[in-house]
Image (spheres, rainbow, N blue to C red):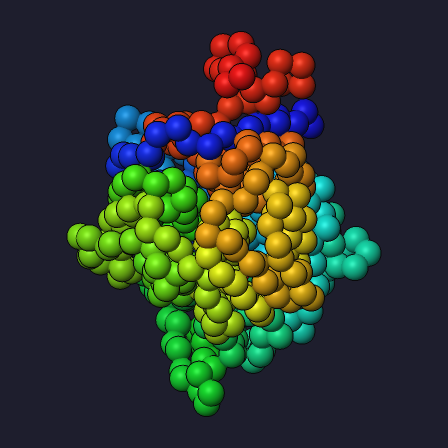
Length: 462
Ligand code: S3P
């Protein structure tokens, strides 16, 4: 695949404006998958139209559902076929870059009498799938995977899986969800025990579709999630709110460019997702939540971010990690511009995301002149209170959040920051570049010969 290098320059003016961030990726995937399992038409507004979710949509079609956008009304229609009615796809399921599509669909397919083969891009093909294969095999499904439990893999499902009780060895909503989805078509009650609370969109949305999901509080803050198998799911309407993980990028950009004021509309603030905002506020950020309300049972608000207040380094509580697992790359950019030391620990899962995010962030920040220590599962960033020098060319390794994080950093550094490829941004935030440009950011294509270029391909910013 051709790469598209990009460059981002120090903002010459403050960033200002009100924007609508694309829909939440986790909810978008789930709305399509659960829609497939409910017989009849599920309607979805606010769906994220990023590549990852479109890969889920294509998989849902191959499994027997119909997924189409009603462009006139800006609604996605999912015509579901009902639980136990899935068909074996006639060709490979192309999972692209998406771990969520892969792991959730592995669970869903495992609970049906069908077979499927999954493939993915170079990043996804390195990611560990045994964390899902192990519990699903305990339930009775079979897998043939590439060495080390990787993609490509074959799934041999069964509609007579054995319900299990499984304690998650890693804090992962994807693993939890895969088991719950397999349990959905098993006779009896399947239980997942999590010791650290991970995002609960599967539990909330399955209830909305009519499934019985009970949560039991155990000792030491652990929870048991019980799903009762073989329900009749009812089609429904899902309104997807703006993705807090995507919102974190323009939010941090506003914090790093003095004089900025940016409003982000209708952002999901489920407490299992919003740790990044609590952390930035502890660092001294001016972040206000207005119009706080409820959207389909989940809290949302408009967020007003005002830049220019000095940020200070803090210790991020390790217990907060699952609620901001995807936000450490962008938080690290804020930490690099803050005064003092930011210490982040409990980050072992960052090593198995779309890239080894701990290493990618540490290497990229070091190249930008930041003083830091990369631990096995921790990152210590020593900020000076002024943005780092910058001037580096960053490898992004097919990781959308690494690409966006360093482009945001370039808005504050003394010298521009460039990245090798902006294309992966389309997996989760297809209009990132245009939205940032609307706010006043200076991000442009980087041509090997001409350097920074404008939209007409002419050299600029020299
Ligand atoms: C997700 C769960 C998280 C997160 C991912 C989306 C989900 O992954 O990083 O972007 O929608 O369930 P893990 O379950 O691997 O922590």
